[in-house]
Length: 233
Length: 262
Image 1 (spheres, rainbow over the protein chains, first blue to last red):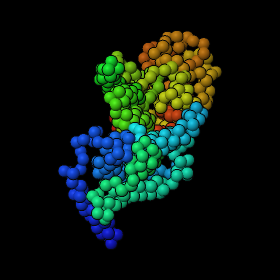
Image 2 (image 1 turned 180 degrees about the vertical axis):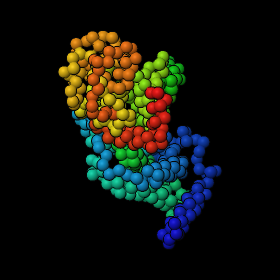
Image 3 (image 1 turned 45 degrees about the vertical axis):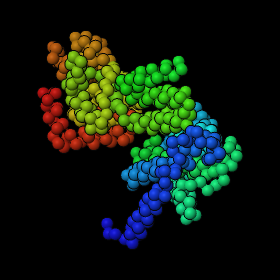
């Protein structure tokens, strides 16, 4: 394949992103970054009553960023290797009325549980990753009952891909935003809020919702690729 | 504390049960159970976040993906009646031309061959209902509608034995032997009142015990042995057809026929 200007641009952009991320990591000083005493630190420091969330979405936000990147690469790999040969018609499983009815009942519950876990991850156990997987399981259950074509008609693949990439881009920008403002990267810019309130924990709820969006779109794209590739669910 | 210890003791047991299952579905369900117990252990260890992730991914998503993955893989189920040279029990082994073709075909697809011996009359029903993937055992092309027959892999003929000669005209034979071939008693065949139709392989086997020649009629139409496949399994049907065609082109089919039927 002949190199084209677009490829050059893509390479330059990738190098820039890598440099900025490296710079961001450099701006975090391990001596001043709190690490040993997360559990003893007062809730007031992050505003989140769920201390696990305060670790992985505040003190150690960059860990979560790398996890997201790993997941992004996994989705990219599956799409790259399986996306080329897609079968157009995938019949639904010949399932009984019981499966169809319970799928219809469980899907809204799965989405509701996902939203709940993502929105309240700063207060109670939960978070974006689990929320996204639960919502994607709901989509999978529905596709078993109604067929994957029924879901594709309602949710376009392009929309899912845009959500998947857009959420990662927004997350990356949010995490790097403190840099031009003269703060170390991954610093929390939003007000802490009252601990225990829905809008508390600074950026944690925002991150959780974005991660949930990214995970549900990514997990669904992977499952959809598997099903489309082999031509049956 | 007791609950935690009990769970920890249960974990390796459940893991061992899951690992030693031969059926894939049972093994996957065992793995799901393991994930569930692990999630409960995390919860008892005051790590609800980890427990939640273990339950959603380990118990939910992974189990679903594995179950979907094994739907296509697994076994090729064959129902057949014994037919000399084609599908024969030899001790605890099965030999014969048809068995060899199907065993190679299953290996070609990466499936385990699973054979069930049934009376000849049940073969078509079991294939039609989807309980078996392929029907075999001296199935003669044109015997019954409602199932997909592959192209014939071997020429054969039909013979009517015993009884009066009235029932042996042109067309489809009236009374095909329908039970287990192993139960067929050659001597009773010639003394029975109703004529019984046999295919070439079974007829030759019966003929070895002494036969009064005048009680045998050969059907004039040329026939062929074939496999039967469920009408909904078009992919399996065309794959088996193509595989037989390939064996024929390689000359392997003739070699196998020579080996089992000489």
